[in-house]
Image 1: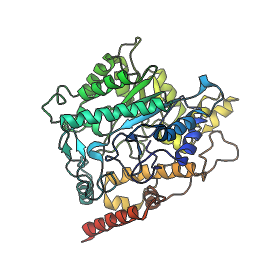
Image 2: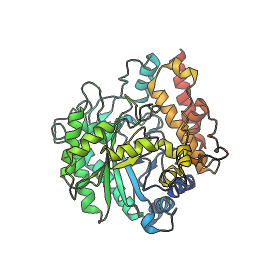
Image 3: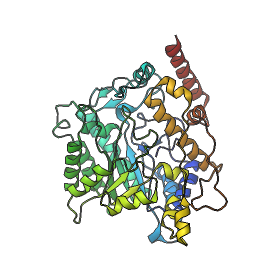
Image 4: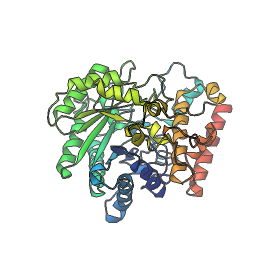
Length: 446
């Protein structure tokens, strides 16, 4: 999950990251994955992203060594420690103006093709459509030389992970980011070797270069969309074909199933009451991959909250692995509690944890925009992570409840959005954001 804890403008992990990940490191998890670490500092998401350093040296690698140590020092047994995975990403066309790392006049982001981000939700109002146009200009198409540079940036990210002692990396090819943009006919209009029907070329090139550059053992996973479910976009059948072909390369260790993008931000929208949202697709993916040595395992994420659903997902053959995001923010030790055997049937019956929903203020309904609602959900979880990273909150207690739990902090919607950029690192960034805010006020209320 995106932490929003790095310096404004992107940078290395810091003490807040170390405290947050040490909480997860002692939480009983089998694998801990960072939020997306951007391979290009000029393509940030919300301004406070972790970034792969321009050059690798003992000084630039050291913060990532500390991060890996925080993730893995929660147990005394090396065999029981969680795997530490660095998630690598390039935000592509979804890197916004102002806070995306290119400054006020830094120009448009890069993408597979010059297709702008626009809302595909018919319920979104005029303000939502205007927000998309203001935040996401039409991107510029990457040249083949630019793509070669991007590939090398991912390779450098993998080398960073290896030098810092991580067990592996995950390529973020979901949620509408750069690699995901190559996989969809909606956003990949290219006619060269990176266009359809060779849309997987960029991923295969990245994997080949990483495998040639990083010694084994080193795990590599990839996060992909189940399907965008938007006219003209990738279909479920195409997504399954992608998974089968990528598995046949025998260069991947796991494939994570997710879904959504900024145009239909299901991946950061409030959790659906129906759990295991992409379970049916992950089951098809699992069946499509031959179960033999050298083949990747399938990991399912998205709206998994209860022990019964998680157990059923594995038992019924929907996935090999379960990924948990938002519940792990609210309950950092949730995994440990899940695996502790109950002392009695009564204890098993009382095993519970409440996962409260983020605030849904009245003004959100007035604005009628899914993007702001999804951003509010992300901001609320980031505010909780900020409190954990600053020793202001330790998360909910779970398991048999005796005497209640430590309550989730009361954080309002606007407060959560403002806290995405707290503390302010410099006066210049305050001025930039004030100008941005004034610009939006003039546009919305003129």
